[in-house]
Image (tube, rainbow, N blue to C red; front, top):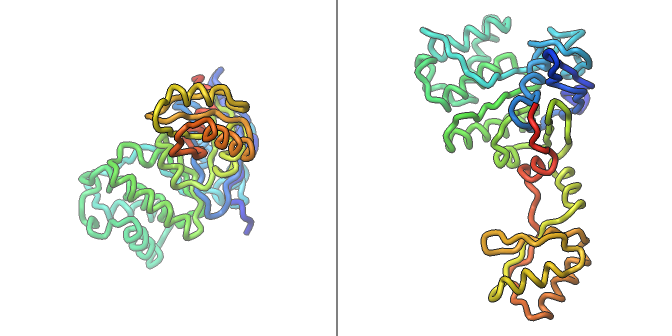
Amino acid sequence: MTDTILEVRGLVRSFGKVRAVDDVSFTVGRGQIFGFIGPNGEGKTTTMRVLATLDLPDAGDAFVDGHSVLVEPRRARERIGFMPDKFEPYQNLSVTQYLDFFARAYGLRGRTRLARIRAVSSFCGLDEFADRPSTGLSKGMGQRLHLAKTMLHDPALLVLDEPANGLDPRARIEFRALLAELAATGKSVLISSHILAELSETCHGVVVIERGRLVVTGAISDIAKQVKEQDERILVRVLGDSAAAERFFAAQPFVREVIPVDGRLELVFQGGDDQAADMLARAIGAGLRIVEYVARDVDLEEIFMRATQGRLQ
């Protein structure tokens, strides 16, 4: 086994004159959760459908645990679990019957089928809902059933398209905990979402796409470091005359911009640690009463805003 569970190479998919996916390449490691983010209509779902062998690319390929989705689609399909963005419960089927139907569709038989149904039901917290109609679940429990169905054949990679869409805060937190447990067991997850703050807490890495093209990919910590090297954001809070403090910092070397934010000043700073320390010393020497002076962490929202330009196809 290699450390890479998913490798996407030069994927291209067009619909008429619109190139929905334009030469996209990225990798996801074993046991990692990668966020797949970008504006609506920018190629995320198309890419996921190609990975799930539900659509064919015009060029390029993708490998799931070393198996090509084009050359070995059956082998790739055995190793991937695809959870579309819409859950479709079946009429007249209970939760257990729903899982049993899909377990049979996956080719599971006998004791293996029953064991997998029990395992995914327990993992997703569905045991007490076993006899409940699949159409009578709340949004959150419906998503748990959707995930359980996706996990029945024990895939190495889960591809989840907007799984937290429409969930209430508690359901989102619980769903996030399930993903963390999956990664802890060695499963890999590629998840698309517009809730970037939650992805920051869950994901090891990120793939950012815009207008069908890859903008940036890699570990969040590595991308954040690159962003901070371009310009750091220092948050400053002072007692007394904030206008005087704003004028002082605006005149300092390496400060490109001063932005008042919620009673503090955000400095767009292009120097290093030595320059930041020198500036703090000068501020104190100038009589500014500084009670907070800290570098602001770079989160996924800032990475997304810096990487993309907001242009739609």
